[in-house]
Length: 302
Image 1 (cartoon, rainbow, N blue to C red):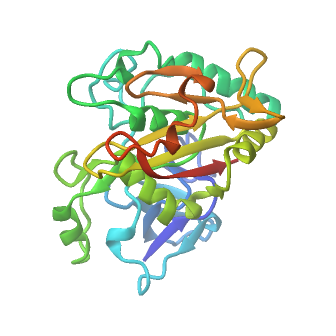
Image 2: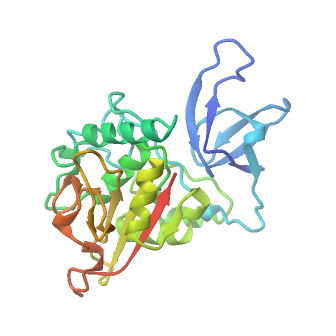
Image 3: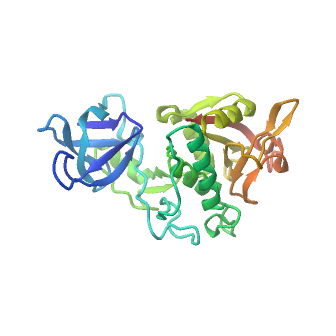
């Protein structure tokens, strides 16, 4: 049987913590799927993180049963790869994996002030305006990579990978599929992320917001995470995605008559900014069929 994580995250352990020397093997995000291997002990079940080789014990009360008559195997979220030492700020190797740098802090969820203070530290450490990982090159720009990294360290989920057609065929036969980059999984680019936000993000705690004034307000008041995602008129051209971040003493959104017109954002792209607002105006509303966007959406996560 298959189960999903029903809490914000769930520790996968090598042994139940009732035993000596139990260690955490992985942090499984909300809504990710595990396969039950052994439920002999009522409180601690042995499970396998689906489509990976990771096995261990989890607290059974933090799981919910998947109705496999409704949910197809190909609809199950792909587990993101584990952080890698090769995935770093000074390299473009393995950008599909989380950064394996313990110097970068995670968002401190203790209270609003610790959330906002730790977000500032994350932005400073990622340093998107200077870090080689995010600099545009002849092949691409990296708004999706930066947004994934930011969300990873702020402890909210967005996907980095999507199944290939080959993998979906196997999944729909009922088979598990190993995660092999550029074989069974490929990157989630910005146009795909737009679709994911519209179709699935509410299952992962994201809320759609009507306007940027409300989005900035929520990010400021709660120390949360904001997203602006825009889809191109021409779908084979890259869309764009940015994060909306809490205002600081020195970095502010742009307001007219007290209303946010251009929120405080952070992005990789053709130009990279740790913080920006007025300099790109309402870029998501550009109506140019060649360079603009057909639609844009705003999302928030606590």
